[in-house]
Length: 154
Image (cartoon, rainbow, N blue to C red; front, side):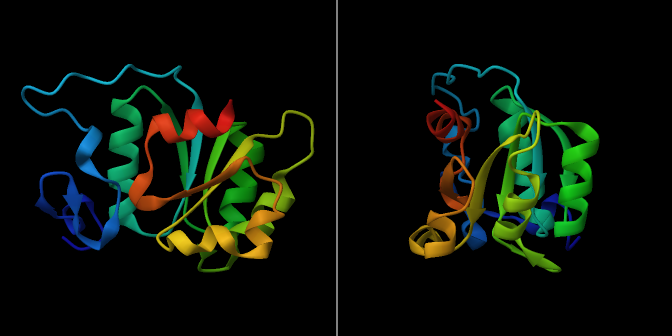
């Protein structure tokens, strides 16, 4: 089952193995639901199938619309143009290039999406290339929620 949703295992309440999307915002008995967000169109760019499955489930549950998934830099650039997302969640490390290079490639044009960099390395936010990239901000993968996305977009 490697490569599919089963690749991410719940270790305990709100904790996934490998630091992927936290389950703390998924529905649990007795816990009030978070307010749903606007249904923004999202392009998710990441090459780890387990993270993609978890992130897609979380974002969809919280009201966002994941319109496409790219696993490479080349696909991210192509899909950004093809599906015209409002938001691109972009992994910094891709198998064929840098997410930062992708951010530069998709920025600035008419109707360019708002880009948010993501990484399993929370310290990546301190890298000078991340700080000067044409993006709205950075979210560590373990902290990815619609609330975190919305906070960077406002």
